[in-house]
Amino acid sequence: MIRNPLLNAIVGVTFAVGLTAAAHAQEAYIPLISKGFQHQFWQAVKSGAVQAAKDYHVKVTFEGPETEAMIDKQIDMLSAAIAKKPAALGFAALDSKAALPLLKKAQAEKIPVVAFDSGVDSDIPVTTAATNNKAAASLAADKLAELIGKEGEVAVVAHDQTSRTGVDRRDGFVERMKSAYPKIRIVTVQYGEGDQLKSTEVTKSILQAYPKLKGIFGTNEGSAIGVVNGVREMKRKVVIVGYDSGKQQKDAIRSGLMAGAITQNPVGIGYRTVEAAVKATKGEKLPKIIDTGFYWYDKTNIDDPKVAAALYD
Image (cartoon, rainbow, N blue to C red):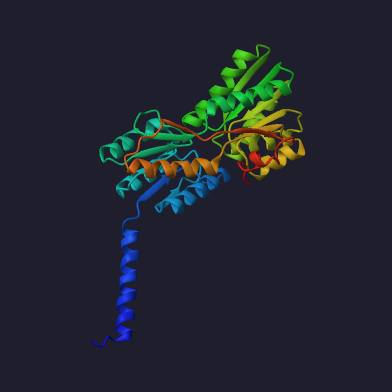
C-alpha cells in the first residue's frame, strides 16, 4: 500500500496537536487571590507562583484589588475564582471574617484552600504559607529599642487592623515592647491602609502630636515609605524601622534615613503556595503552617547574598 507523504504529515501534526490539547486539558487550574497589586511585594509573590506553576505544570492566575482597602472587591474576585471550579486556590485575606462564607463554599465544593501571607481565622485552609509575622515584628521591636537606647516614645503606623498580617505585626511589636522595655512608651498606633500617601499624612499628624517621639515602626512597604516621607517632610530626626523591601525602602536604608527593616521571602511565599496547592489536589498531608522565613536587614548586611536574595525592587 502506497502512503501519501502529505497525508502522513497531516496525520502526524494532527496527532501531535491532539496530544498537546490533551496535556493542556489535564493541566490543573489554581487561581491566587492576593491582597493587592500596588506594592512590589505582590509582584515578587507572583513571580514565585509563576515559577512553581512552570515546575509543577499547572495553570496559575494571580490577581488582587488595586488597594488593600478594597475588601469588597477582593471578595468578588474570590467568588469569581470559586465559580470557575478550580483544582485548588490560594488566598491572602484582607478581612478573614468577610471571606469566611465563601471559604465555606469552597470547602463544601471540595476545593482545597491554601492561605498565603495573611492567614484566615478558620480551620478551612489546608495550610498557610506565610512569615511568622509576630516573631518578625518582635524582632523589629528589639532593633528599634536598641537604636533609641531602650527608652522614650515610639509609634506604629500599621497597614490595617483586619488582616492577619496587620494584626500580628501590630501585636508582635506592641507586646514585645511592653514586656521587654518598660522605659519605652508606645504613644499611638494608627492605620494608613498600606497606602504611601495616607501613611505619610498619618505620620505627619503623629509627629505634630508627639514632639518628643524617638521612633516609628511601619508595618508594611506602603506604611514604611509613608513614614519615611512624613519624617522627611517634617524635617524630624526619628529612628525608622520598616517591613518588607522595595527600591524606596532599600534606598532609605542605604542613605541612613531608615535604620533597617524586616524582609520576608515573597518569592518563596508565592512558590510554596502553589506547591502546597498542587500537593493538596493529590491528597498529600500538609503542615498547618509553612514558615517562609524572614531577615532583619540594614546598611551592614543589605548586600549579603542570603539577605539580598529575599529583597526586591
